Amino acid sequence: MPALFALSVIGVLCCVGMVLRRWIPFLRNNLVPATVIAGFVGTIAMNAGLPRLLEGVDAELLAGITTQLFTLAFISIGLTQTPRAGGPRGARGSGLLRGSWSMGLTWTLLFSLQALLGFLVVFLVGGRFDMDPMYGLLAAFAFAQGPGQAATFGAIFEQQGWEGAVPVALAFAAVGFAASFLVGVPLAKWGMRLGLGKHSVPLSDSVRRGYYPREEQREAMGRVTTFPGNFETLGFHFALMGIAYLGAHGISWCFAFLPGFLGTTMSGLMFFNGLLAALVVRWVLNRVGLGHLLDSQLQAKITGFTSDYLVVASFMAVQLAVVAAWLVPILLACAVLILATLVICYLIGQRYGSDHDFERTMGLYGTATGTTPTGLTLVRIIDPRLRTATMAEMGLMNLPEMLYIPAMLTIAAGFAGTLAAWPVAGILAALTLAYFVLMLVTRSIGRRTFSFSRRRNGRRRGRGGEAERLEGELNQSP
Image (tube, rainbow, N blue to C red; front, side):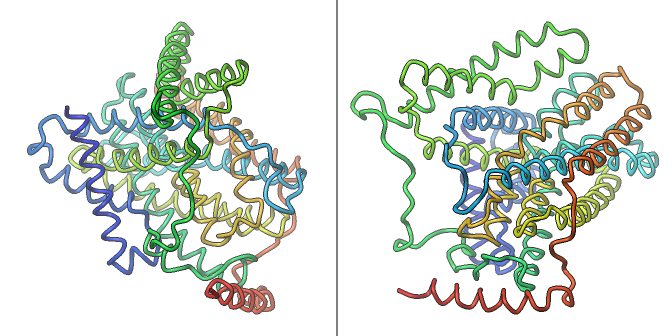
């Protein structure tokens, strides 16, 4: 019952977020999602006494809901059929792979660098607040990976004796999510004014408001693949997710037999185990000739639902009373991480060597401060018609991102006590350097293709402005 109350409150808050975005210009113009607005409102409500009104709806429950929704989101991703198309019109396969490799390596570098910087900042200022610098390592899970993984790893580390790891990780995630939009959206608009977005068009009123009027409601939710009188299509998709969820618990049980912190960590990574189980379920369906019963478009909507709700739940799980004593080092670490992430994304992103490096840069920044959907939102501001390969590259960059595993295991070993704090920091520094060297060796960094300098982009800006004007006129045509 408390879980249903919590989900109901999340739904109400999302509606409140939609209303606030519609009527508050600052939120509307910066395209702040209703879920983020709902999250901040929910955080205030939870810490102002909402748990006293709804018994059982507390931070612990919401943290659990966050991790469960995160697992379901990855299960849904695993069940989604991968399109066979080669990408956007005009995109070349070699360029697509090169772009995804470069962006994935940059993300991996940022993960280890964010963990290292978080550790160093908390080491420098956290002593005055009795905050162990190990907590600073949580920033990488929150910034580079988002609230879902922040809650997941925080829960794992709490089981290993690090009290308050979940609320600290979620506090990092909340600030990162805010920065992804409050910094990313103005930066995207600035680049559009300079003509850096080759296919950018003026933002429509519908995009700013966050919902479509009747005449613009053209996109369908998906196809009906089962006879409703037998089993509703939506229910069938949820049933498959349930099968994969049970399979994930089985995989976690097997991983628990691994020795030491490796077993504890791998068995606790329910989102990863859920993804593996979902891939097995999808493989079995394809093998028995029933893969056509899965509708990718509907499954993607289910993924979006779980992602939206977990964002709100993660914000509401932040216990200000717990993190208040450490608020100063947390905010200082966040400020350093936001600046460092922005600088790294800009300096490396402008040297990927394509005609859409600006789109890549903004997508990477949004991903490295929030989640992949956050990065995709920033890309769609610049490239609303998806004429560049950026979207496809951001999907494929998940493969090179797996190179972050040594950094993740190093952090896990530190929290488990297998490694001391400073050896963890030393290994992270070495990995950060190694990732950068790998980028150089694979020629992932080349000549600069764009700049925020008005002088350098003066001529391009003129062409971009004319293109925007023409695109705007076409959009307004009946």
